[in-house]
Image (cartoon, rainbow, N blue to C red; front, top):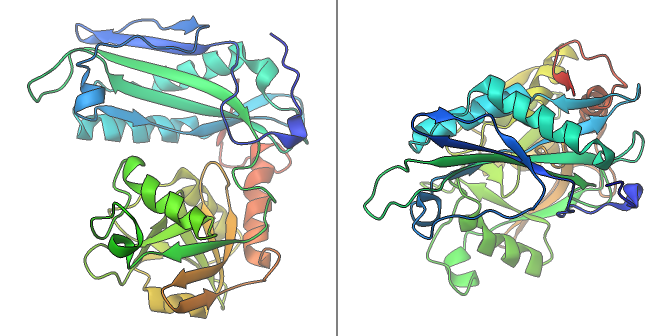
Length: 338
């Protein structure tokens, strides 16, 4: 299938492609995997993924680079992170080599859907690991499916490096119709859906979560990690076991160090935010989205340019995205050719 898509105006939503790849684990081993054209999955109604949450996903991207080659950005890190998740919730682990090979196979089978260089788009890659066998008593599945789907996407937030507004819900239990107290993302996006919708209803692009105990320390945005740039040029990001170990954040930290910046991974109080020069959300879908306003009750924190992106964040963004599309040398060996 050769797609007829408006590459420069893609949204961030599912577009059907040629196929996905699917592996089955049973009797203690994974099969060889196969490409499946139909975008549907048949599963037992008592599957552990449906009843006990034995499900985990990753997200990464493939890019058409300046030299015409298609490359993945740091798939080994996604494979490693999925392994950590699988061990934590007692699922069959996907070997890192199998993970990378699966991603390369499905991207190669859908290369016509990788947006061209210069369009601003990419091929979003979504690996998914789920328990599929029937289990009524609480316990891990005896069968698992590992699949990887792909879809062409544009920017998650329209406007590129245009800043967005964020909100902190200290009053979530009163503000939301079904709220039951302080809510944080904790390994499952489902618990963040209601506050995310409420944020959008109030005119904000994203919500910012604080620590659950004291509501004092910054944790992460609803969709992304939190990063800040101090007025003396240091890169700061929260230290917390409650937040996603972001591959994008890790990449930005490495680039920042190599550009001569000090990098601090430490607790960050909400009261520090007005003293920062720049704030952003960072993640696979956006790399960097500047946040110029954070509202917490009657308090409004404004940081950075009102309309554009701060100079340090823009430099970091250009450097990482330049590596992804082959405009900057990949001195780290992050990009994997398909």
